[in-house]
Length: 220
Image 1 (spheres, one colour):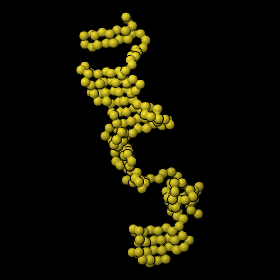
Image 2: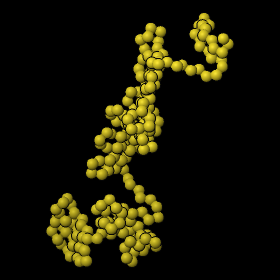
Image 3: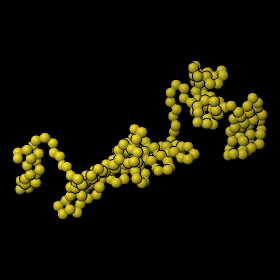
Image 4: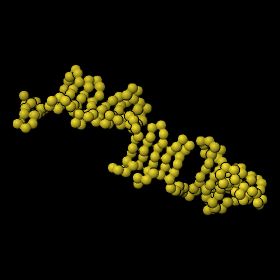
């Protein structure tokens, strides 16, 4: 029939479909292998995954994990998943996950159950830690009212313990401060020390200013 032809041209074998779609209906798995059958190239499993191979090594696999909408597994290791809640996930089966802006340039490293590393032009700049973050280099607070706030909880407001920033006409967070004044505002005593026991200066709340030398008060 001219609708479908199976032939060999002396170099290549052809399965040619000239009319409509090509449908392969089988009850079991569908395999594409090399000549001696030792290496798989494609496996389409009945009611299951589709697997693609390179030289006998599986490089891609489709999957639907329990409770999720779909997943592609790259190189038997990296999972790209669409979750049941509609979110996207990318994670390795083991080891770290690297995101690179280009070949050979690290941008982000995500370590399981541990830190996240952020890079600029292949140089580490920020790392998360159990205590918070560690930063290498400078921190620039930009904008018309740059501020650094230290809070004792996760909210920005009633539990502010210190504010360091620049006053403006619309944001005088210290009474009588003027535009462009740099202000440090604390609700209690402000202490400058060397280590945890040696005072250098102490500014007491609603009280005195004390200056020290080698932990001995010299001026009040």
